Length: 91
Image (cartoon, rainbow, N blue to C red; front, side):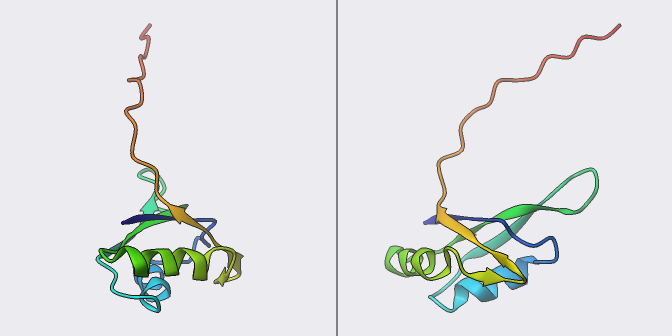
C-alpha cells in the first residue's frame, strides 16, 4: 500500500520518514520528494508498506502527529493521474 505523508519539515530525510513508519511494521520504501531545481524537499513524501494492516495502523498512528516540529498529514496515496502536457510558445 502506498501512503502519502504531507506537511513534512524540510529537514526530514528518507531515513527519518522510514524510521517513523517502521514503528508500525515493515517499510518497503520511503521517499521524500525533492525539488529538481533547488534540491530542497517539497514537504511531502511517499511510503510503501506491503502489509495493509500495518499500513492502516501507520496512517492512524501518524496522522496529526509531530515529526521534527510539524504535524503530519498521512493518508492512503491516490493513484497518479496523467496531467496534460504543458505547451510552451516560443517567440
